[in-house]
Every structure is written in structure tokens, then in C-alpha cells.
Length: 386
Image 1 (tube, rainbow, N blue to C red):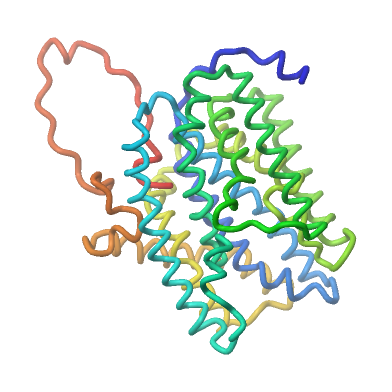
Image 2 (cartoon, rainbow, N blue to C red):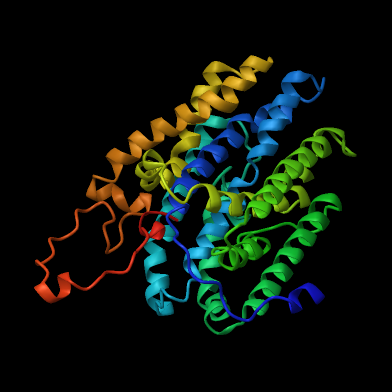
């Protein structure tokens, strides 16, 4: 606990959150790449050929994406400056998370039953929902739902707790999550379900706020890049050469040591490198939630037609080109869908505030107010995304 004693009690000065918009666009493409190559990593490992090692490299390099999404969500939701009352906060999140969770769970249960595995009579959709992971990407909504319920209590840390207490709480939650995942996977003890799936991720959620306003020095940037690249290399080697069946699944888990270190480093580096510019990514950001929701419906049919790659060039296509293609298709569909009033809600856009509406015209400022300088305000990433 000695390092914690050197942490000050006051929160850091607030910094712009505009970097979170392009960061989440890059992260969602990384998530799509994981799903594009996941089956390749699982099924092509028998010979451990060059194609598998390249797929393993892409998969390992993209694993930071999901924890960073959770950290960004925590950085925004736990901000004491927002000051929302619990009831108002939770009612808004029902529109943002609750309705999409219910709707897309039903969609993907039908998709899995009647398209992916129509002959699998052993699959029980009710039990799949009770696991909190009815389809490949939907567990994230169940994680966010659980974290949302605890957010009013976690926010007491950022409002009333010292920075030392925030660090300590975040690290303790993260450590418990890492231990839980190690025990459950390596020793096959316990299993996450709909009521507990969010708990191991709570450490990322809290640390997203704790690290939100950290500004790296030149030496810090070098250290963060070293940690990111070293952690990715560790995951690649550990997955391919670790004990047990190959690939050994544990190193890919989001709470495995290599992925945790890579995620924290990626979060800080995205803040550092994406503070300005990236206009195209800012434009794409409002549709990133739609990419998350839709991409398996596009990815699986196209990949089934193309077949799984068995060569290095094929893996490169599925790891670089196709994730971008899938994302562009989903952006186009989302762009159209959120314009339809009856459809907006299932994309998380059905709440009282319409993030795509044009702002109301403001009255002309008076001469006195025109002379008063206005504070610099960063875009609010939470206005259009989870």
C-alpha cells in the first residue's frame, strides 16, 4: 500500500474528453477484428502454421478494445460534474442500454437458432440469456447494465472520496476480477452469469475515471508504448506456447495480466494521441454503437460465403480489410435506422434527447454578454454513445 500513500488527495484538473470519440471508433473496429478472426484462432491452431500465428497476433493486438470501452464509460458516468440524480441517470440509461439489450437479445437468439446452428437441439436460449452472454458481443450490454445500476454508488467515490481512495478501490476491484477469471478458467471453478458478469469489469470502470485526466509526459508516452507492445507480445507468446490445449484461451481474456496492462496503456495513449484532429472519426463516432450491435449479422453471412482463411494473405484480409468493410456497412445501416422514429430506440437513440437533431436557434447575445469570454467546452462523448 506504500505507493498509494504517495498519491495526492485531490482530483487532477479536468481535461478535454473529445479524444474519446475517435478512440471509440478505433476500438469498435478492433472489436470487429476480434470477431472476424476469433474462429480462425480457435480452429486453425492444429498445425500452428504461419496463418495461425498471424491471426493470433491480430487477436492479441486488439484485446485492449473492450476494456477501453468500459473505461471510457466509467470516465463519463462517474464524473462528479455531471451531478445527475440517481433516478434521472438510471432512467436515461434504460433508453440507452435497456431497450437495446432486450431487443437485440431477441434478435440474436433467433439469428443463432435459425441461421447459425439450426440443428443444435442442445442449445437452450433461456440458459444462454441467464449466463449474461446470449451471443458473442451482447455480454457487453449485460456488463454495462450491471455497472449502471451501481454507478450512483460508485460516483460517491469521485464526489466525496480522495484520489488515493479512488485508486485503491479501482485496483482492488481489478485485482479481484483478475483472480476471479484466473480461478474460473484455469481451475474451472464457478462461472459468470447474468447477475455477476459485470462485477469482474468494475475495476476497469472505476479506473477509467481515475485515469481520465492523466496527461502523459514524453517519458510516460514511451513507457506506455513499451507496456502496450510488450503486453501484446506476451499475449501472443503465452497463447501459442502456454500449457494445455493450444491456443490456451486464458491469455486472451480481458482480465488476463497481458490484456490488463495493454488496456491501461492503450487508454492513456489514446488520450495522448487523439486530443486534436481526426475529423472523420468524430463524424463516424455517433454510429459506433450501431456497429457494435449489427456487425455479427453482417460478419457471419459474409464470412460463411468467403470461408475461413488458411493462408497468411487470407488472414490479413480478414484481419484488416474485412473489419473495415463490416464497419462501413453497419455505419450505413445505422445512419438510416436512426432516422426512423420507430427504430431509433433499439439503437439506443430513443430517449428524450435526440443527439442527431439540429440545435435550436439561440437568441442573439446582448452587447454585454458578447464581451464576456466563454469557457472552452469539449464535446460530450456520452451524448451519442455508450
